[in-house]
Length: 380
Image: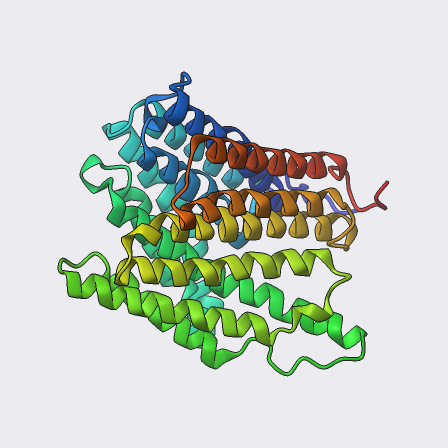
């Protein structure tokens, strides 16, 4: 018998997603509708939520960056996960209750430093092709934006759009790397062959386009904004082409793949609308932003969180149909935010209905996590 000491529970490595995904889902279920109620009805809320910037900040940073960390960190020692959660909680307290303070900025810096230091070296070392190496600089950009967004002088449309574009780029890349092999494998079992998988030419083109936009958009001048609009619109068209070439209509029996495809479709639509808004029609900005945030970000993150969790538990991404209902609800929420914005008929009723559906979808996701909290087993 070996006398070597066994690693403690805090030292054992487990997927960071096991801890970060439920926390992100709970935060999404609580904070997004709370911020809407604070803005529309002056419901008591932390000071940081009484602005549209605060609403966007907590969606793109408080929620989305936590999901990004959970997905990209991989297996992590328990003490590191606890450290990240503690830093994230302090950053939320800082932004929500003491917006613009040194405490808010310092805690945001700690979160950004932890995420960057644990993710960037992993992808910088392991990646071979330049497209795969793009994750490292993108994470650095997102972490820098995370810190800037905690400072009052940077809190405006520019930083929100930059965060949105950075997350859109990440969703484009990681979404493609999830969907393409999953669809190809499923079609192969159906005795079909998918010729267009990763589609490196399209992938590389969109990566270049969106990285250029991240550099161009903050620069002063209407020409830079219009050029950014052209590039974003082209990225949206190429994203749509990539999605069509995956032939998801052959996957009607795979709800998880259909939901991933729906999220990718929202991303393509959102980029096209955002490009048009920057180019010639600012009235489309709200529709484009919410197509990307509620539609793409909401659908893709919820579906990926459910899929990763269920694959870890049951090796079956469709083991809990409640996750599919959650995905449908969040798509309905996206429709309630985008269609009225396109028609110029936004009202508090639409916003409240969308917030309710958003909350219900993430509560269902939390129920899925709870029902499958034990080890590998068969679903009830």
